[in-house]
Image 1 (cartoon, rainbow, N blue to C red):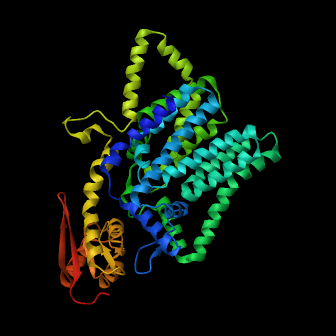
Image 2: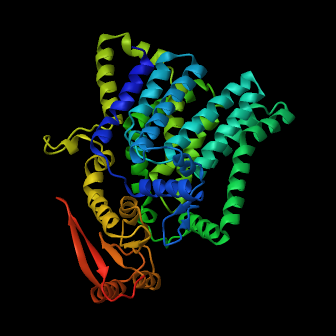
Image 3: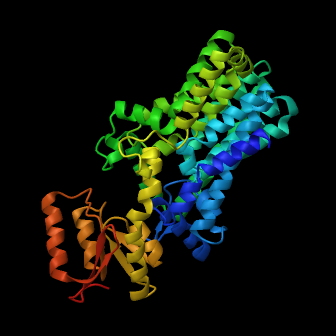
Length: 495
């Protein structure tokens, strides 16, 4: 068995528990699949909010248009994400072997990415981050090869970067760093340097501008609303989202332990030491070390803190580890003495164990959940427990409402509506005025987890009183973990 085959097998093993246990769409997956379904039906990127729908401009559009062509729904879409995850691992392996010519470095880099707990989770669910990371890696590989093999590969690099940005706009930061690298790489020939920068960066910039113009032509109001939300998420201290109140120390801990893990952090420290000692690949490290540092630094400034926005840091960090650590010297030194060999095997096993989704259990060792990384464990053991009741509520409404019915859900509207196959309103982000207008036009109301981000306690009580006066309980949907209440309007004021 080849080394890369072993890495792929271990990458898939890291995802097998999720394949086995997680079968219900979660909140964001339901959004993406809903938008893709509306594109399939109407040709427009609409969320099924309200009777007419609402334009989905929250991210650049390529991913939901890509999902539009994937048959089979949730299971197939998750399988495609798995394929992109494996593709990332293969690109990391090929990149490190191309740059260093060392199989051990390529194997270790690919392994660190493939078994990383955070990467394993997002290589399973229907999210655009892993496909985006794949095209960032492809663009970087073509950029490095284009230095030796010609301008066509540089153009290919620019196209790959453009696809990454159109999958998710956060890829633009990496494109900018790559453009700086291209300029520095060809700086001795100024004209060639600017040509390289144009080839590498312009397709992504043009694609982003074209997306903005397209959104504006579809709906100026919706596009401006999205831009205001982006600005608010980046800068405003009053944003109503728990992710905007994460303290710097807590955020640093999440980056180190939840995103990078012990294995990658250890590799980065050793890689930096080797780089400082030997000063090799200084220009290449403008990307391989410069991008992670810049992305992480900016994440402390941006108010809305979401770890998956930093997912590009993972593959680039393992590239830095593979390129900068002289694995032949390090492994040769470890293998040259029996005691060092034994210690090295033990340390390597511990680091790889901690780099994977597995953990040393605390407390009751018979509790299977305690053997996994907490974030991985939540998705593995809690996703279906949490969302199943919403699936059941959605299936009930699918059976008991008309196809053109617009349902209202207090909190997790995207999941309930996805399984109901209905348009929806949701209350938890609404102001008091908006919430009351929604309730006035509601015939079916799903009261799941009571969360009102924009209301005072007095306003929440007023909403409860309105529901008690105008609605009756039609169905209490239960499973073994929790219940939700489905209300139906009794006074005939609704639609």
